[in-house]
Image 1 (cartoon, rainbow, N blue to C red):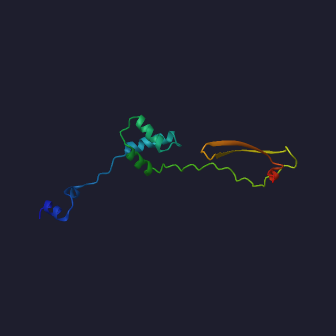
Image 2 (spheres, rainbow, N blue to C red):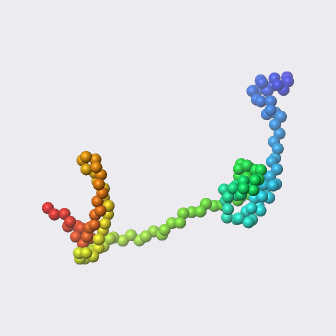
Length: 133
């Protein structure tokens, strides 16, 4: 049986049988990356790729990323700077009038749909007894 008929019978392309994998020659990419990272050790892939584009290097992003990963140049991501947990303490009310004040904005809407905002200032000493019957 000919190769053409065998490929038709098995349902595979003829090019599959003739395919030979060629190792890419990445010597120039390795050299470029090693010299760039020696001078800029804290630069990541984005700056490396921008530098390669700026210098008109012939390699694309996929080739650069493959070699970048082969050289284990991936930098660990920086964590967020977190504030230390504050110690929670209950708020102290004032002992006499005009010792402490609290302020806040509030918004509401009328029946007609018109919205309005108020700026409320409350004396901390007597806020518990602010309402009267």
